Image (cartoon, rainbow, N blue to C red; front, side, top):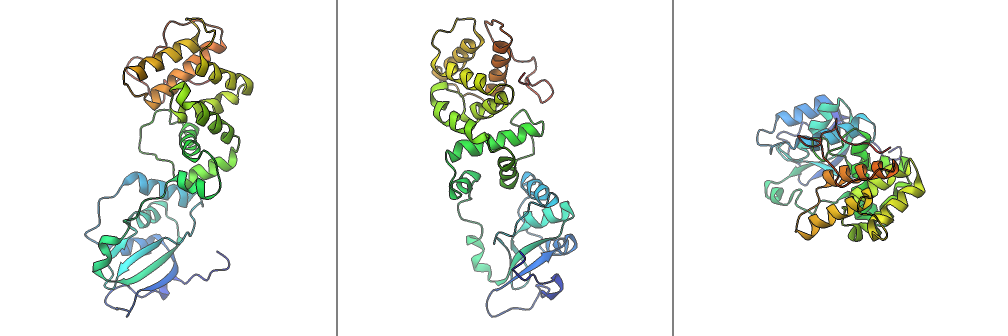
Length: 287
């Protein structure tokens, strides 16, 4: 941003009453106070998606927020057409961040605002030349959640693309786990996100054993009926054959339980889930 001039907030017209002949564009530093002022002028805002605001705010607080060309859009009389979630995040984070401001829009453009297809983190990874992007994005998402102690796939905290990108930068080896997951997902019948996350977690303990574990889950050759790997494989297969869908959280817990039992040299006839369901507190941890 050093090569790009940033105007001060005071240089922007108050966005009320002064109508330019055509839309005008400026880059300004938006403070929490200015964000609150703009939000207060818009009584007809859509309902807030709180996880979106929370995610933006976390990125702003961590200094990850980037000036990426997306705009805050205003009508000639100061009505906010687009940017409510970002402005609320600025207020929540107590951060001042640069924003591209477009003002002077006419009301007839409103149906077209924010109507395009939303770019996913998988799309962003593909643009940077990554491989297995859908799987890599899914694994990074679950890895960020795991790192924060979010074992179950529930809750209000939704990892942002910047959080996942930061995690991928710190853990480039996750690409190997995503590659294995991409190759084995259909054979193992487990979700690719579960295979990728578990392979990475297990590899932290024993890389060769982690890969061997998932290869044996995939082929099933020579497994005794009471081998925890066979029990995992059979349970997942039965669910699939009956038309059931493998719940991501349950699949993750079952895989970790099978790994732990296999590592301990134990036999199993079933893989038990906690009474009352899985929570962050009772979730199994690889060992």
